[in-house]
Amino acid sequence: MIDRARPIALLLARVAIGAVFFVHGWMKLTQMGLGMTTQFFEGSGVPLAMIAAPAITFLEIIGGVAFILGAALPVFGVLLALDMVGAMFFVHFANGFTVDKGGYEFVLALGAGALAVAFSRGGAFALDDLWHRRRQSATTNA
Image (cartoon, rainbow, N blue to C red; front, side, top):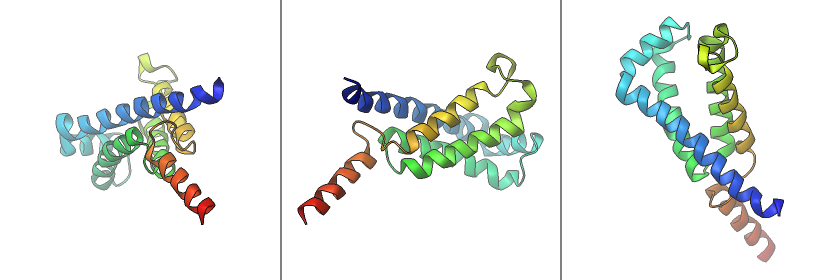
């Protein structure tokens, strides 16, 4: 029973996590704009904010889509988790734990979720899992 539920649970987790990252990146790009995002990063003490702001914006957009598709999960999972470590230390840590006070609870959960999915092959309909199975099949049939 658990083995049949695992792929669906991973699918739901990676789509939810991917959607959250995508929306946050999209908001940085379209609602705040890269200029305001850069100013926010500068005000938060993020080093090299002029480079970090667009890099993080596009990481969240591209990484979010990659998570939804289940593609390159180890790469994007680690990068998105590091993104959340940065958000935790530069923005949220001083506000304590709980999200209602701007704390790091939410970014901690997102980072942990990104890492958990990163090395799982993504579950049902994940491109990484499909690629892994094709590679295994090719090796077995060779």
